[in-house]
Image (cartoon, rainbow over all chains, first blue to last red; front, side, top):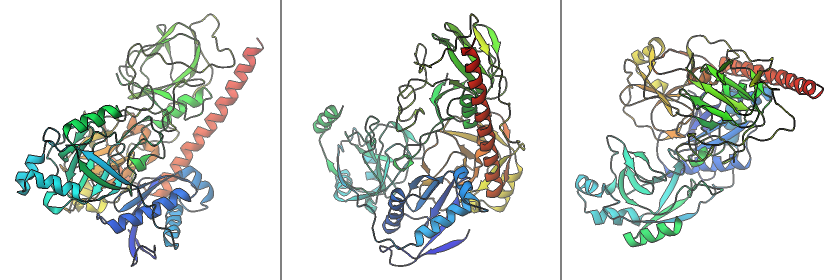
Length: 250
Length: 323
């Protein structure tokens, strides 16, 4: 696959390499490298927000991920305006032009969202496991988890599921071998990522607590609490507070 | 029973993890609508066998496309791929699956349902969209939009109108699913790449609207690298850690972390959607030029059928009103 140089956004100090991959005949993925990196993720989101504001003709939607941006397009429409080119060639060229333009604006700075979490063992069912695996007291796992500010790198997997990072190395944990049923609101760790299950679902992340907040509400115009680019902090609540907030939100 | 309301999918919300869902066989869903002069994106009922028995309390114009489940109205057989007028108090029944897996029922004027995020498709995981966000159950009542003209089939239980759509997919099917190579195709070792293109793959029983698990000789990746999550699509073929493949279908997640070996071209997804557990499939590579040409051909075919059906319907309504 060909690589192209990207000269560049103001926030990127050097030229960034990227590749364009086909995702079938109606989508393509711009891949900036298979890594979790904050500055690359900001680049992805700068491009994403620009595309939202100023869409390429024929674009159906765009999907930002850790280090890639996917564009879905209407092949039938593009073939009416692309001349001899395939829709894939045409869209790839548009994307390259787009990324080569100087952009002065940075990504939309997201909101800071504070999330109450009850870290009681009843909810944090894997706290003991992490404690023994990582040789660290449970209290320290909780302290480390809530002492950092996390970036929402992307949403995916489930409606409103935010992939956040990075947790302190001392509490990083591998996924479970087999996915198990996980309750809505469960806060988990996988590798150096942290995230919250918005819905009851099978899941493989190590669960350390639960939030009473609704992360997905289908009745709302914007049904998910998080957007990618947001910043997130966790704070500890008791079981009583958990129940109070939960009943208020019900 | 898994009968759900679907349209051609929900667009614009993958960025927050809400997947498009929509009909598995979008071609058949569009045909069912087009036959009766509906917009192709009107909601339809997607049915698997065994399917619901449906009582019409009011006259309606309907059409069925996709799988033929040996359909009857008040015990008399009716064909699929035809518009049919049904009288009030008639019963639509589905007796046995003849060939394919999914049948689509469209109703002239559409169903009185609220849209969720701009689409009628049922998102079973989010419990939203379609009919109360769930599969249809016994005793559910779906209201139909009223029409401005009478479609009463006289005194008969039903009347088959004299135009139809062909059984095919608007294109020829080569007996193989055509694939565009994916971002991680190169991850496969040489012998696995060969096997991918040579070996048969069988659709497993644990296949559903989310994805088809395939059974075959395992394939191997040359790399132990993990993939950070990135977009996946309807038709993406992923390599699972045990060396087996999964093809993502209409209810797929928005993002995933398994290597993407390729993507099945859009025009072959309807055929795949109509296959069943145990069916054998083979893959072959194609390029964008060929994939897009087929897509244009299929779209042109649908457009022509849409124009023809609208004309037939207009003439029919015109004649009826002069009786």
